[in-house]
Image (cartoon, rainbow, N blue to C red):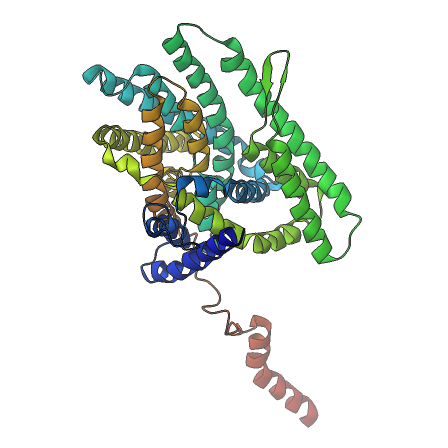
Length: 448
């Protein structure tokens, strides 16, 4: 137990210290956390086998899964806060259209290119593996995007649209993967499972929405019994933990597998809560501050989970490079096409696709399922390679795009040790300028 606590402490300290270096390089803090995870992982400092200094094996990193799952739940809960009715009325239809179209177009582009690679080099990749990778390509990592937005306090039309599209993207990606994986399994085994292709994916989405809505309503009901800010924050944290635990439950009914999507459940919880609780914005801000160390651990552990052994296989590198290029093109062209279709401005049209490149936890979960195929190991290794590249490059590209449209504002303070310089009060300034004129009027009145 003491070694795990020391590992977690070293992960936090290492990530935060490295973020000082990335700040000098004008890179997002997320990149520092991921690099810190690589350095503390089993392929760097972990190889020294010094107790408490890094993670000595991938199995040891996997035991930290409860931390990453909990952090992902809080991240999804925070993203759900973006689905306020006021925002949905203004851009909900556009966000849904863009979220669906860009994911479908990305899948089709990656499918076409990887299937073409199969016909050129049949021994490199099979058609079932190509179809499965095409569906995995649709998934976008919400965690990295949210951390960049939070760090730089980004706000504007692109940022608000991005947060909605990222949330919708995960639901669409879940359906696309379930359908594609069912087709891939049918091609490999020669039989089609209607349950696996149609029924179970739809059921998982409906169950996730139902559970998330119920938890959001219950959180609002229980929260009304407390008036202290600290206690209300505590009950919010407790409900997110409960929601993460419940979303991990799975069961079977009459041969039909029933489960929940962690991201969808927690997103729905946040969505329902923020729309029915009058004080949800203030409460969400306090929860965000509380979970910041958890988010740092999430990215450091995610970096430690990246298996660098995949770089030793030339086939993985080849297919991985093709996958990365195809997915990047699909995200960019898919977003640009859907933005033009929904009449978005040119800055949003040119930059939205770049902000959707990060890929991590959701894709890795899909890759674990894809590993059951005949050449599923290739699919898993390709996704691992792509995640390694996207997580290190994606946050910086997201920051660049938000800077290009002017939605990253300079931070109000440079150091928490020094207070912000007080901004001049425009009312006070106006009164100061009007003072001489007022004095003249008083003197004139006295003379009269």
